[in-house]
Structures are given as C-alpha cells and as structure tokens.
Image (cartoon, rainbow, N blue to C red; front, top):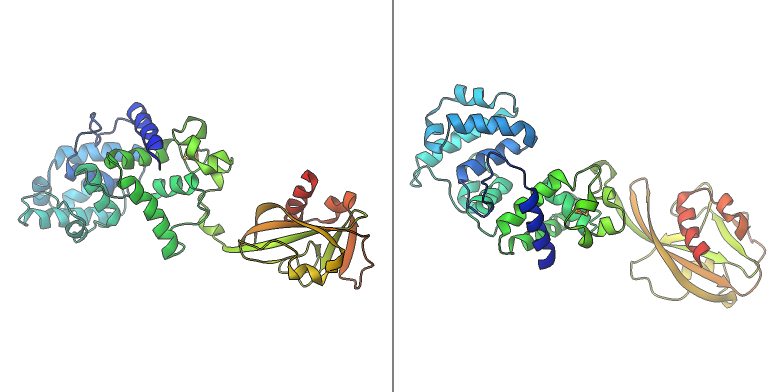
Amino acid sequence: MDAQSLKKLREWFKKNSAELPWRPIDLDAPRDPYAVWISETMLQQTQVSTVRDYFTRWMKRFPDIETLAKASEEEVFKYWQGLGYYSRARNILKTANVVRNSTRKATLPDNHKELEALPGIGAYTAGAILSLAYHQREAILDGNLVRIFSRLYALDFLPTESKVALKIYWDYAREIADSSKAYMHNEALMELGRTVCKVKNPDCANCPLHSSCRAALEKRATEFPPSKKHTQKDWHGTVLVIESADHKILAVHGGQKFFKNQFTLPHFESPRSATAGLPSQAERYVDADMVQSVENIGKFRHSITVHKMECDVLYIRLSGKAPAPTSSEIKWVRRGQALDFFASNFCLKALSFLKKN
Ligand code: SF4
C-alpha cells in the first residue's frame, strides 16, 4: 500500500475510530499488553458489541495478570459465561499463572517466540500484542484484513487455499507492518473491515482506500474474497469466435472441455501468455489459407462447476464464405441469430466483445 493510501487510512481512523473500552483516546499511545491480550482473545469469534461489556466487567474484576492468576477457574468462567469457547478462558488463566511465575513479573513477553509458547496465544494474538501494545513492526492477518487485501488487490483466492496463497496475503500484511505507525495501520484496517469494508454491502463510497482499490474500481467488491464453497480450480483458456465473410459464426458440438452436450463456441485450455497468431486448435475447423485476420478482442471471467475460468476471446475473420460443414458437429450460425443460438452465458460473454468490434 503506498504512502498516500496509508496517510488517508490514518486520517480516516483518527476521525472515525469508535470509542472502545480497550482503545486509548490517544491512538498513538502504547497499550497495556494485558488489555490487548484479553480484548483480542474475547474478540475471537465474538462481535465487538458483545465484547464491550464483557471486557469492562473483566477488567474491573481482573485489572492485571497478578489479580487474574490468583482467581479460581470457577470465577474466571463466571466472567466468561456467555462468550462461549470456554477453552479460551481456561487458557487465559493458565497463561496468567505461567507469566506470574516467570521472571517477567506478571508482564507479557515482547516477542513472538515466548508469546506463542503460552497457552492459547497463537500467531494472530501474538502479532496483535506486539503491534498494538509494544508498537513493534508486526504483521497482523485476521478475517478483516484478508477481506480488505482480497478486494484491494483483486485476489480471487483465499489464503487457506495453498501455501503460496497464504504467503501472498502475509506479504501484503508485512508491507503494512514495515510502515512507520504500523500499529495504527493494523488497527485502522481491522476497524475499516468491521465498519466499512464489510462482508455484505461494503461502503466503498466512504472508504479512504477507494481510489486504490481494484475491486471497487471494477465495481466487483462483493466478489472478493471468494467464498469457501466457491473455491474453484483456476482454468485459463481461449474461446474462438470464428466469423466468415458472409457473417456466420462457427458453433461446434462435442470435443470441447465444457458444454459437451450442446453447441458452443470452440474453446481450449491455453497459457495466460498465449502467443499471437492462429492457434493450431483453430485449424481443426478452418483452413489456415482462409484466415484473413486474428485478433484478441477481450478477456472475461466465468465459473463452471469447480472451474474458475479466465478466457481470452480470439476473433478469427475468414476471407471467404462459411464452408459447408464436414460433420453434424459443426454449424455456421448467422451473426444476427448468434445471441439466441448460443444459450450459455459462457458463449454470450465471449460474443459480447464481438458486438463492440
Ligand atoms: S473501496 Fe470498498 S472494497 Fe475497497 S477496501 Fe474500501 S470498502 Fe473495501
């Protein structure tokens, strides 16, 4: 994220940050690591609106690690009751005891290794403590940041899909962490995800990152990130729109990757950096000598079953009339009737580029 976007993000956060019991009025002030730990643990799987009261009551009764460590599990559970996932409360108490009995004198460690060795503290909570409390240049990647990165950079995959995918998301998170005031940028992004870049109805018009957000600029914000159930295999292909001099479009039946039982436009898997010129697959249908021109007229995305497709549309113009079909698997369809003839959205998307040309 460039310096200008980060500046806009900070300005937005200063004006719009909600008053929360775990957030100091001075947004630049280092926080109590204990308060960050408790609030971030409560916020896992639970809404901010619910956590507010729980946090306030908790801090009144257990204002520091020392007090907490002396409490019984029964009492800790009482203050946790209603938040669910009681293992979180049990781990908090265990950690309080470990820290109290350590040489740290009831202070949480200030490094990943020691923090993550404590019961219930994982990479995310450790990052939040190091960034928000200790103001270290630490990356944070929670659901809010995943959603924002996916939209900002039009990432059409989830970090859970592969190691490479996870690394890409973490790289963006680290870019934020490398900035000065990373603690504020991290928190501002979490707040932005909660209040503006929401799962449904993101308020792009009032977002400080709008001018650098690819998904918003393409008006596709809600398409990112892809939902788990739609996680699909990437497939890159080429669709051929072959038109004869007498304005007929070639339709084929069978022998295609998709739409096996209907007429469709010829298509095949191809590399993203397809070379120019007539692809050999086209010569299955037309004589190379008849080809007047070959032009890439557009690119579209489409999903079929588990395939998330990105297709280049190659327009092949013939110099002569449509040749007589050599089999029942080939048809020449008048251009004026093509939109009615090709029923699938896949073909209609490819043909939409033809209209513009
Ligand atoms: S412009 Fe819209 S989609 Fe992009 S980050 Fe902002 S709210 Fe999210």
